[in-house]
Amino acid sequence: MDEREARFTRLYETYYRNVFGYVVLRVAPQAAEDVTGEVFTIAWRKIDEVPERALPWLLGVAKNLARRSHGAAGHERGLVDRLAGLTTDADRLAWDAADHVVARDQALAALRALSPKEAEAVTLTAWHGLEPADAARVAGCSRTAFTVRLHRGRRRLARALDASPDPGTEAPAPRPRVIQEKP
Image 1 (cartoon, rainbow, N blue to C red):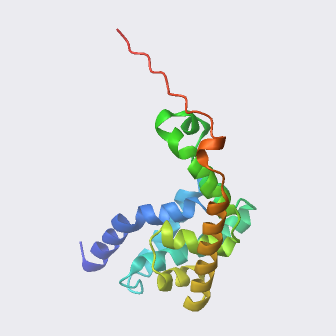
Image 2: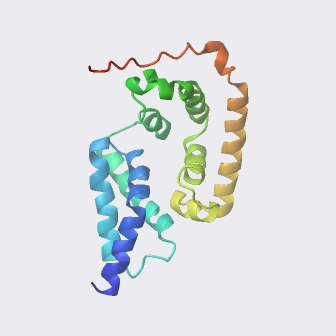
Image 3: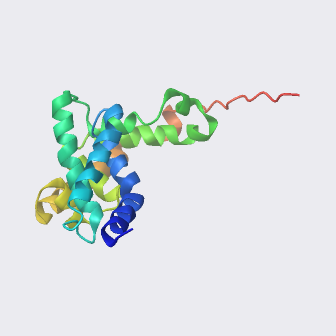
């Protein structure tokens, strides 16, 4: 394996899950693997141009491809709705998830209160762990504009979460899952 192949292999093994996680929230689930594969195809073709800090570059490529896929397929589903879709009704009834359902729903409602650009800023930094400068490159804006989006998004998110009712007052008691043991 030559140096270029080794670098690509490291990129793929290190960042595939990050890129897929980013893409799956932005395109139809059945298209996520194809778009992620296309990101790495482009990375292979441009391996000499991929910066040392590759994740922001990869997510920028993913954003462009997802936007194209999103527009072509006509999917209008937002980032927050895709996040909400990651939990099924079965998860909501499971004992181990019951304690988190109310907080999750409140967080998603708070995220829905943000503009799409603010939600993107918050998720790029909190979910994907990018620094503001790198996240700004992914978002396609200046660092200053991104920092303003992030600040406003965090402030609105905090206000929305503070305004949420006490989880104990509205949440039904969790119902444990009954597991029958076989003799």
